[in-house]
Length: 396
Ligand SMILES: Cc1cc2nc3c(=O)[nH]c(=O)nc-3n(C[C@H](O)[C@H](O)[C@H](O)COP(=O)(O)OP(=O)(O)OC[C@H]3O[C@@H](n4cnc5c(N)ncnc54)[C@H](O)[C@@H]3O)c2cc1C
Image (cartoon, rainbow, N blue to C red):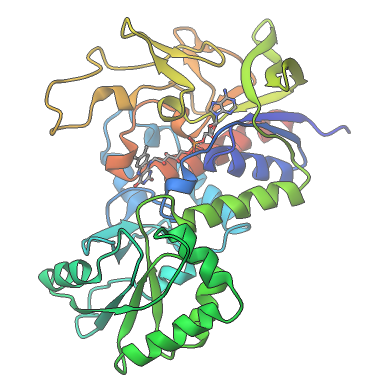
């Protein structure tokens, strides 16, 4: 039997999770993507919902929220699939709380090992933290972090290490700490600063391999605290998924914009992709539309305040009022604009699914305030898993 052909549009977390899951299930997968997705800007963690037990919290969301269509099992499946390529700790069943670069606390579901020792749990009241800044690195002020943590009754003090890099960003320090012996050198400096039993928080400037080298030279537990973007843990997650796609022999059309489709009746037969000055028709038995919605420009608001799906012309669902005047208040309804989908993740119009073999995932879906709810990554991996499961049922 020939493998079925899946075309995925977009290589953010939803597109790559779907591509890898479908490939694992035997599909011949092509991904067309251009630009950067949200992952490089993210913390390198997976948020499902900003409540202590995310999957239990889904039921309380408004009726139009995608978590009423995406099942808890799909989120579990998406997380399992992701974990095959990106080593993550934690569970989607229960949030873990970590210090932020401002010294507040933030919940997430899955997180890299380099952040694990920073978990703040009830019953850890006796734990002492030392938050260590790096001289010359912008956007991380250890005193601010430590003082704010103390305000939350978490015992923390601030310190700093001298470290030169050819720039003041996380990227510059990340390159410097890749040099032979540099990570171990930082670990030794941290060991000199830390008192016995203290947990050492550092700005997230290294990938997991370098964190392990830092930790190997410091007897105290060392953890990374995410920084404003571009984020090294987010970049590493993106690199690992891209690498996995390449290893799994997923065809990647980079810098290639999907610009339309070819259909026979209600079935899509090809995706039109703009490549090197021409438009190529990529044949498809199934299409997963993972182009990121409003944030990535796949959905646009025109000067008449009309919303459009710029790639496939699908109907965009939205509230009547797109923007309200209270810019410091509730999130703008515009942010929740997107595609309505059925339980198979197929975009729907007034008469049901627009195409029988076109699926939409991640930020393409309507009804969520992702940044505020901390739901974007959970929606991405859950909808990807649910779309691939629907395709596999069609193939059975
Ligand atoms: C400021 C901000 C803060 C956020 N904070 C959080 C948070 O704290 N927690 C959380 O869970 N979520 C948060 N989110 C949301 C989260 O980042 C997204 O939900 C998630 O990254 C979506 O992934 P995706 O794969 O659906 O889309 P994306 O990551 O946007 O990927 C889509 C990809 O498709 C590409 N593309 C677009 N159009 C085309 C086309 N025509 N052809 C080919 N490729 C195309 C894009 O360039 C992009 O590479 C935040 C978002 C923003 C903007």
